[in-house]
Length: 115
Image (cartoon, rainbow, N blue to C red; front, side, top):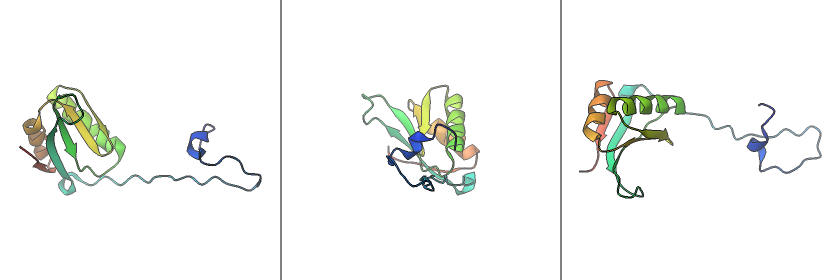
């Protein structure tokens, strides 16, 4: 841990024990599964987005870096913006079919969900 690890221990206020060590809830990131073992779902979402449609890709199992890399690939192939966090990739606009084709080409197990 670096010198600025105070954010990691916000729950502990003070300890007088000189041998006290802070316990960190270090979340272990899951190992990224190969594309053939991923089960992704592609759907159109308009909820809480002021009526704007986005393509939502869910079900990714792996590290945040790999998720962001896949999101970057999809966004660049579609030529639009979006985001990748919490195991979901959001691509702005209705690009379900194009995203489906890109993921199938990269050998991902992918399903189209909804209309």
